[in-house]
Amino acid sequence: MKSAGNARESRKKQRARTRVILLVVLFIVAVTASLVIGFMIGQESKKRENTTKVSNVQEVIPTSESLNQLDGAFEALRGGDTRKAMLDFQSVENMQPLFGMDYLVAEAAFLSDEPSLAHDAAERAVTKNEMSAEAQILLDMINFSQEKASTDGAPRFSAPFDTLQNTFRRYASSHPADSKIYYLWGELLCSQGSYKSAMDMYHRGAIRADTRSDYTVLSSKEALARLQSEPSKSLHSLSEITAMSGEQSVEAAFSAMQQKNFPDALQFLDRAKECFSPDVLREILKDHSFDPYRSDSQLNDFFKKESKKKASIP
Image 1 (spheres, rainbow, N blue to C red):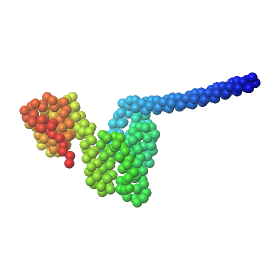
Image 2: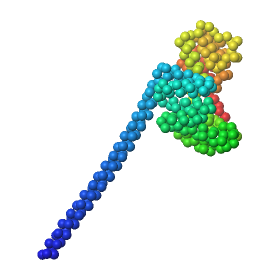
Image 3: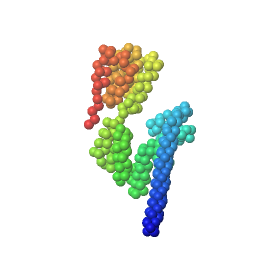
Image 4: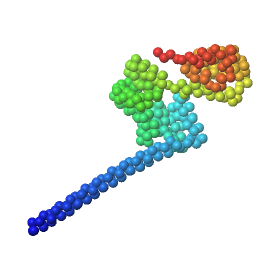
């Protein structure tokens, strides 16, 4: 009997130990699960917070004052006055926290031969994740230039260039439609005497370039819109035709069409054909301002032929 009692007591103790172990295991599992869930919630919260921050920056709408200053900065940049562009971009940045301003300051500073200022602005852009891929390229270009200058004083983009070329390659793979990267890549290769490889890069850039955003296309369409709003009261003289730019010849051609002077309009269009590439001219001729004149017997052949012509890139 005593032996049976001891056995029962032993089983009770074993069951008690099992319950304790089970409770401990369940407690550990519960704590671990709560920590994992808490971590995941925290990460998701941070992700939402970061996304909100970026969205808030992107949603800042420029005031009329900022927009005018921004336009002036881009005009200066296009005109080659990079220092004025840099100062104007900085002025806009001081007015409003617009998306990408640090990168624009960095680019203008780099072109103005202000590498320290460009480096700091590009680093801010990377930190803010605003045009960070473009800013990283600029940082690598600055570092490459400084490294080369410190070694043998050779001109910018001479050698070595492996690191910078890898940066171009990574950017091109994630931005397959960006033509500018191939321009920079071609410049780098040309500086090394790799002209055949540079030719390939320029070709890739050329076939990716968006004709609709070409300066001459937009400038010509601006002139066409202005003439539709305020038709010219005087005709351009054919004696001036050889000195006309492509944009001026398009403007003169459309003005002549408005006044039903189709022979002169055709000559001005021929001048535009001499000035523009086939792709650019074709894009300009798509403009709806020409629709009332396409079927005219004197202009019909020109519009049909030039609207279908495509550029041949070797």
